Length: 318
Image (cartoon, rainbow, N blue to C red):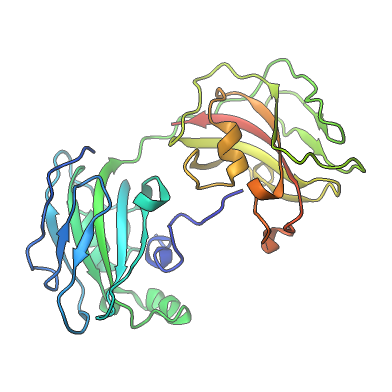
């Protein structure tokens, strides 16, 4: 159901996956490899690079200090970051959470490259930090992973805007209440007692709807889901016509959590789940254009022509 991994580009989360208001423009002193950061905190920054070869040693500096309690190892920190590849030529930006539309949550741990862990530990909400991440900051395991991806000689520059600690997730609710037939010809839903996994059947000779279909089965009474929140959901995903199941949070034993309404999941989810109250069970039929597109999802066995069907229990939002 997700369109991307937790980070914006494959080159960026190589480091992170292992692991605020607007201010006046700030500029970093030439303390991290002679780099300068410009732009408002809370907006995508720019970096001015010195001429010559990229740095081969990692370093970090504080562009602007934040306020409040300092972060520590074990915290989960919400952060906006922009990443550049320092190649000594064009020094391109390779990804930014500002482009993705929402910040990410990073677990502060020993699994981070040393220099990035050093940036997070002691940082405060509202601060902006600059980090040069060279191979000398990687553990043996991280360096091996980088080598496998052709990145073992790569120097990257991170500008990190600290938002704050991740809010504590609420306890998931149990979906219960009067169930109604969703009325989608060719699809059958069976609703067991509260707390049990429902049944979704999509084996049918009926043609799949060409448009996006969303039908509430059980209407919740909780707060309405808002764009930009993290949604907690139990779900079953199947392919229209074959009844092939390609995903189920029920099988994993716990609900999934992901940002909603900001392009982090298939568009059919963003377009249907925002605005529904917590405690809702909803049937969603998604045509290819609003699912995985023409390329499909080979890992899940979804072709570019497949309509995908989800039965979703919204069990929390924060």
